[in-house]
Length: 142
Image 1 (cartoon, rainbow, N blue to C red):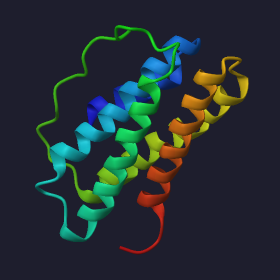
Image 2 (image 1 turned 90 degrees about the horizontal axis):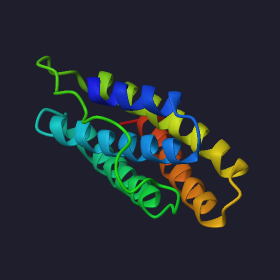
Image 3 (image 1 turned 180 degrees about the vertical axis):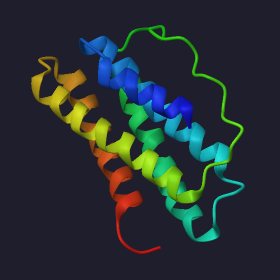
Image 4 (image 1 turned 90 degrees about the vertical axis):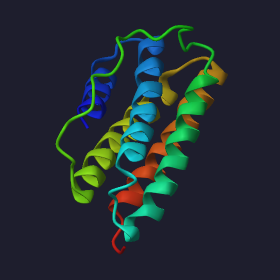
């Protein structure tokens, strides 16, 4: 999950719209990567929740891909290699939920301050996806 933490740090440190969009796109992609890497060991009860969260992460990433101000090439180096230790379901949920909350807040703020309508819409849509990911992983119940 180191790659997810790195992506969250990049998003947190991003300055300017292109860097923010690039970091958000990468963070959504890293959420997908972490879920996929852990799907074989995820408990059966949590598998469906992760499937729904992965769908929202893909939707958030796709919203970022349609933002006109997204740079044509990534502004960052490739994500670090995966960890050897297999995290538990709760660790994965907590980490992804934290990144999703960061994305929801940051992209929501970016949407309110962005002048371009298409960039604003992309940020708004991606923030909504991040909000749904956070809800899915923090709601009470199975």
